Length: 254
Ligand code: SF4
Image (tube, rainbow, N blue to C red; front, side, top):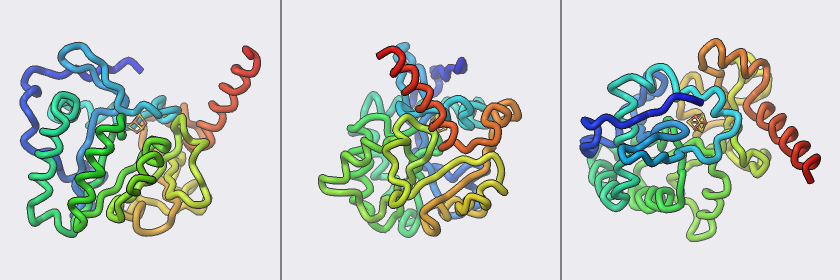
């Protein structure tokens, strides 16, 4: 991965709006709003690198959010500015998010947390959980690879009823996903493969990921070379291959 998202000076001002209507992919869902971070990592103005998807595994090899519209000059700096706000002033970010969510239009609306990025640290996840609990009339949902971090927050006092998590395959914690009980997401090479595997497609609506079948699939939407790299595998299968290879290597070294 060679692309680095470096903040421009103009983007250093606090974002005026944290929640936006979804990109072309989510735009079909009229009442869905999105808050997002840069995918995988970003370099902040002081040179610090913040890893925003610490549990990314094979997904990072073909990450959809490191190319195309996500890198546009009016998009990438906005995502980095979101991260900078979180990193430099988490209480201020939380207050700004609460202020925005207090608007009438968010009652009955959906907020997708992260079109890219993840709950990269405990303090950030806990801030979201406080917010979510205080806005019960809004439904929040997130695809995440932070299985352990999320589970760690379930005990005390548990995930809010208006927060739906979809554990998505392709991460370093895939082996911890309970496929019989968790809501899960996988990336397939094609829509046909999604249907053949018995997963519900989220092609029609992103909200199908949280309202219908517990297993949701999406067709890969990467560049041709990334599609070739993924081949006929799903992210789940690809990650398993990688995990097996790692285990074999570790066994040889041990
Ligand atoms: S978790 Fe999502 S945003 Fe992060 S690297 Fe993987 S595919 Fe990209």
